[in-house]
Image 1: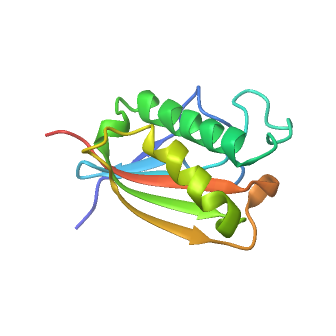
Image 2 (image 1 turned 180 degrees about the vertical axis):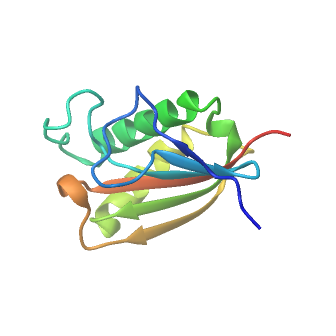
Length: 133
């Protein structure tokens, strides 16, 4: 049995920092690669300082990936969030993250403290989404 898998590379999204697609899709499920606080079109530019600026840039990058495959935040089923300064950044991240979703439509989520992320980032976020039937 073969499984049909689409591999999405989104032109307006940031350049990948490793060997992966922006998203893969199979059977209506979309797995969006973790996005970093990097600038689309300027991959060598340093990530912004602080959790607020980095969270907004990560969420904007995720919005670009989703838009590039015809989806939006309303299609997010699950989120994975990774913070390098968990104790100090968790409350700020939560406040900002919440603002991207309808109050009654928050996805399931896991948020993990990690020792390091690519590019010296403080935050990375990935999504699992479902395409409407």
